[in-house]
Image 1 (tube, one colour):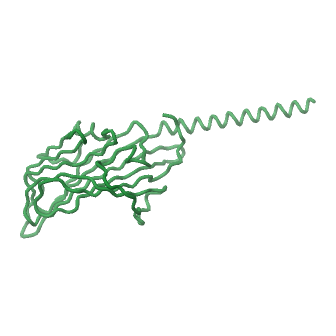
Image 2: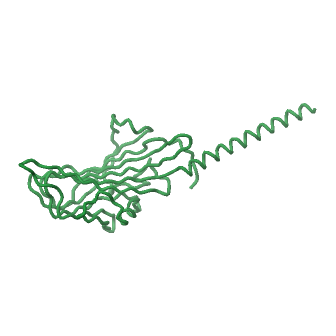
Image 3: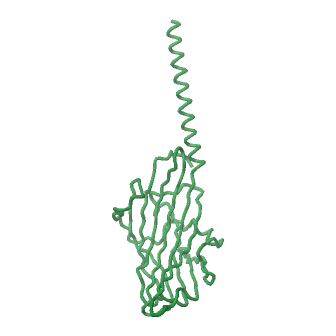
Length: 248
């Protein structure tokens, strides 16, 4: 009888030790994940021209969620935009339906020298942080993208894209950009913008997941005065998704 009691007691202690170990390990994983988790947004916009543009006004989409909230609005409002030339004015413009980045400049670009065109590329950059986990799997529905999103459809992800990891999905859609400027008929102008949203954390090794959103205006020739159909591209589900599930 004593032997049975000792065996039972030993098993109970073993089970108790294993239970405490599992709970402690789970708590450690959860706490480490929460403490190291960071979300970041990197927004950039590039205007490229091979000649001088005059009296320039651009309205560029600002990434926002379905409710119109944008992770980069506070940084833009606070003038935390790098790469802005001294004679440019960069402000937010609210249409009532969407918030746009308004760029005004007297001129952009350089005149030709000895008959040779000189290309100018100016990139504006905004970085912002997120206080909550970013939904990098379903950004159109649950995160910030360049809107409006029209005619979205699934496309094949680039075969050469070896950096992604995970099981990314890629999409194309149409949106709009406004460009108003005067220029020589020979002018070649392009506008592009990108957003990369990333969650990163460290439990035993660094891990991350992300989505990328880009818009590109097809190269314009000569001057332009109005809205332009713009191609949008999204790659979601990039990276690792084995992080622990935690409550908000």
